[in-house]
Image (cartoon, helix red, strand yellow):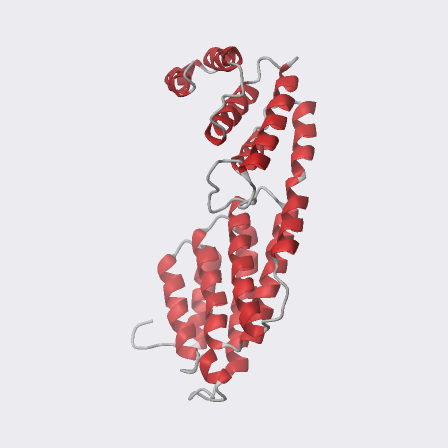
Length: 293
């Protein structure tokens, strides 16, 4: 990149480097500078005013560079789904589409991105990064849609329906846990933990239910507590059940000043955890203090 070597050949070299190791964040920064050097000076506002960019490249070529780079990232995402730099660079490309292309063209690119992340989540709904990324895409599409077509319908209802369908996975997870709650495969319990984290009093940025009311959260929590207590019969040595019960108990108390769970139950759960997992005895002692047992 020294000496102003902003060429397709150098772009190809960055591609090769990133395919080997996408954690080279400096290479991602070089790639950004390369693409910016290929882009004309004009922006979306110029297009809407009827002006054209100074460079002969043209906006069709800008669109092609953006689409090609988005395509280049797909196999990297499949191979390195948790690499922050890939996701970060992908969002930068999408933002460039808004900045440099007519809104209709930018909307088309972002709409394809929504379809892509939907497919990713249908293949692996435990992809927590994917849920947060989807929310970002939906939010941006709402903004673009308002500018490109003021009469367009809000995506809120469609997004609610999508989220409702995905949250029904609770039932499937429950069935799998009932079949073998003490399985050595802990991934189901980790996924269950992620699902119930959506009932926290203050929704986190990656929540798939950011607008769920406190009353609805309490309803889900009470159902989960009842199901897990039933699951305990015959699985008294499964520490994961006790941990989830206590997680839900803390959420329930935070959402409702009335303590809905009998104290003897909570104390029993903590006592069993201390016996099953003595290496974290200090943690269970702190938890007992939080529960006022």
